[in-house]
Image (cartoon, rainbow, N blue to C red; front, side):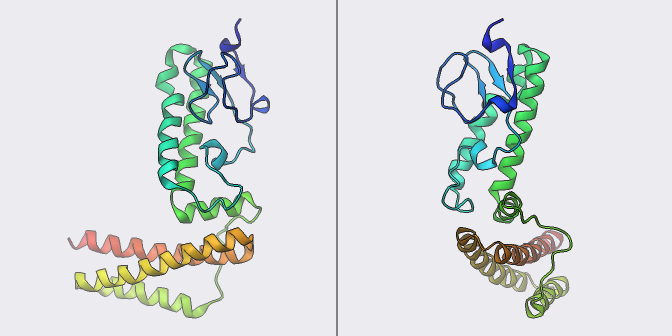
Length: 213
């Protein structure tokens, strides 16, 4: 049995630039080679940044979304289950697992809110339903905006609310990036909760526009 006929266990694999079986360059960070059809599992502690070939040593929140999308597409090409259908059930099952992991990594890193939540989780400060804000002024502003959206009968008003809210979202995203670089996790969590509220306003405004278009 050749090395390419085996499925390497996750604990034996770390990100490599060459296939351990045929020694050809790997197209992505995924342990799957379409030259010799070697495929391996991944260790449970691998980060989504590492999985998708993104640097995380400086600030894991500041990512190149164009690179993320490009790396995601290439990763899916090499581990898509259909490509492994004729290589044996075990390899196709592993390809399916890798494909699902790549999809999840992409979704968690693409949007700022999900990315911040993931980074908090990786650093031992996961978000929970019990997380609340003590800033009642901010909460009141959010409730007022939601009420204005609910009662709005003018698309111009909805657009104005969205533009103001998007400015706040942009500001809080910049703040989160700065706080993550400083590793101020308590402040990161508070800012992420604020972003979650602001994203809720954006969704409500979008839904109102759809319902009245």
